[in-house]
Image (cartoon, rainbow, N blue to C red; front, side, top):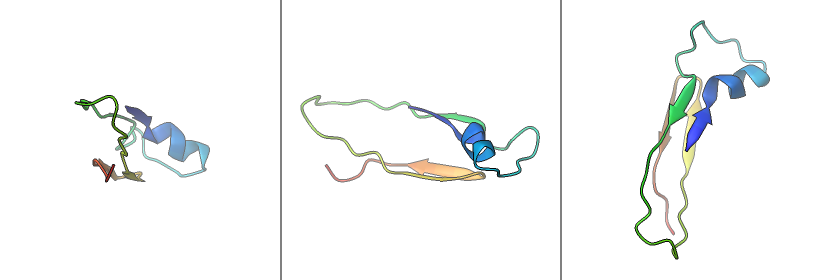
Length: 56
């Protein structure tokens, strides 16, 4: 999953430093059972983010 954090916040009018602290963030993850439902909650700010596997 690739999140364009800097572009997202710039499009919303947020002033970011150059270079932005967060610009493009990549999460690599594996899916062990493709028949299952996976929920990936993401919490995002211009200064940090987290992604975790939520309840199926």
